[in-house]
Image: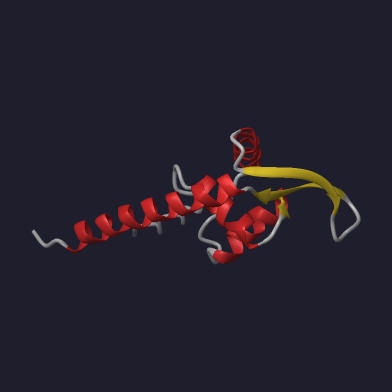
Length: 114
């Protein structure tokens, strides 16, 4: 009897930045909140690795796509909150358009009968 294949919940290679930028376009958030938002909106399809998230935040902050500041969370803990910059909004638009183009091409390929 075949065993069911485990569900892969990894974020698709190359899409983490786009997903983070989208989450931050909704409201400023700390890292845990961003990961939870991505998981919630994707209905559990994507789970973000905390190590990958930290590296992505550092890279995007260095690239000027997000800003960060220390604030109190709702549980009175200190956390770094991230906000989207103008450059981040522009990049989100570009990546969203590119994603739509690529997924449409994959959908066409999958509909092709051979």
